[in-house]
Length: 110
Image 1: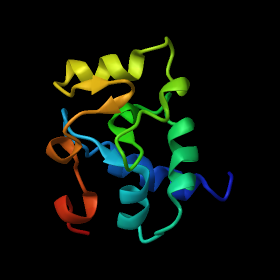
Image 2: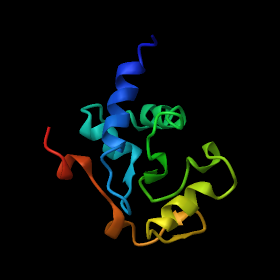
Image 3: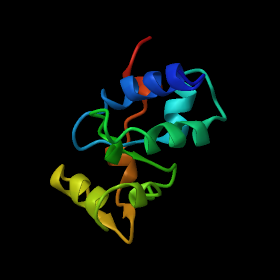
Image 4: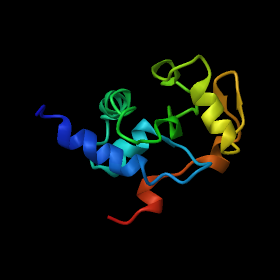
């Protein structure tokens, strides 16, 4: 077992709670987990999440960019999954991010 496994599982637990049609950022997850500044580590966790039943398409960068899209099969799968949930994406960026943003530090109580 890698030392990151516990952290990765905690990330996946949070991501599984993101409601359909909402998104959050790598940094917001890191902040919620008490590891502010480890957004990149959350990204690494998301890269490994595709076989774990985690809705990774709901995690974007702080500006709403689909920075993880190259980890999905097919060129536009991440965008298609978001659009199927009612999220508008133009040029790999979520439109009206403030309307779709889900902040686990606000939405969840520890």
